[in-house]
Every structure is written in structure tokens, then in C-alpha cells.
Length: 252
Image (cartoon, rainbow, N blue to C red; front, side):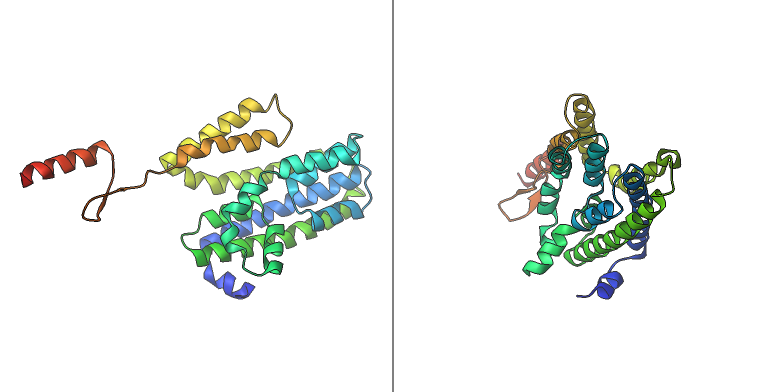
């Protein structure tokens, strides 16, 4: 299935959300390129990182360590720790990457927080795959173009912090996450994980608190319905138990 078919598979709301995230990514990518070059790195460095690494948080971490005077080993270590969260993400979207080795390698390269979020919102396999590839390829293209433009602009920008572009990205992600919080179990899991991450932030290196937020996942687990002797399923909650007791009394 080609990209045009993927595009036609998705509804307008999903395409709109992907477009909004691409806009936010473009702003952050431009900020990254500008910060890297204005900080003293050669023009090709942020561009090469974006093509080969394609992980905004890891790229920011590596550049921050480098500009602060850290060595290559420290920069790579910081990036790897922050990117460790992509391992469980890979398991979550493994079914949409494709069967061929080339397709799986390409898919693994464009796994991001955003593409995984779009996959998890889809109701069936066909839309999951379409959402992954449209968002993944779109974000890859937009990010690299924005980083290149930002790097070029960074040669003449003095204070990149004054632009405040770093706030756009988390704001758009929050807007995408909020609708999912209507579900009580999802909300409990998210808040529990956030509490663990915030509590651990003062004591752990960057990236590890995000991984500890996975501790909230058990709260999102749903009970499997019990199976009756006739093959029917029912809930194990108190209301269901009372209902079954009432039926048994009528049958007696």
C-alpha cells in the first residue's frame, strides 16, 4: 500500500491532528537547528543528527551536553538514556511496521512519541498502519527540513531562547492526549505515571523519570470477562454478581 492509499484510509480529524503535530515539530526542529549552530556547532552537525538519529529529545540532550563542554561519550550516553523509551514503543507498534526487512528498518527509524500516539488511537489494523506511516514519514520530512532552515537561520540569531518555540511541541501533544483522559482507567494510569516521574526527576538523570512513568500501566489493565458454562461472558463486578444471583433465584 502506497502513501496515497494510506492518506485516503485516515479520517479528516486524524489527518488534521497529524498536520498540527507536524507544525509543532517544524517549530521545534527550527529551534533545534538554530540553537545548535548559534551555540558554535558546524552547520552539518544538526542536519546529520536529524537524518541519522531522528529523535528530537535525544538530539537536544546530545547538543546540550556538547555545548556545555561534555565529550562525545557523555553526549551519546545522554541521548541513549533518553531514547530508551522507544524500546517499549517498538513493541507497541510492531504489527504495523511491515514484513520485509527494509520496511521494518525504515519503520523503526520513524518511531516517535507522536507516531505511536496516532497508532494507539486507531480502532483497527488498517488504520493503525496508515496512521503510523503517514505521521512517521510526514514528521521525518518536516523535521529535517525545519532543522536545515533553523540551522541556516541560526548563523544570524543571537538569543534563541527569546523565541519561546520550545513550548509549542508539548502544548500540541497535550491537546492530543487530553481526549483519551476521559476514560477513568487511562486517566488513573496517566496521573500515576506522571506522579512517579515528577517525584523521581530531582534524583535521576534526564530520561529515566520518563521510563519510570511506565509504572502507571497496571492501572490501565482491564479485567477479562469471565466465561460461563454456556459460553457467555459476564463481568465480575458486584452489579453483575447481584444480577446473576437474582436470575438463579428465579430459575429455582
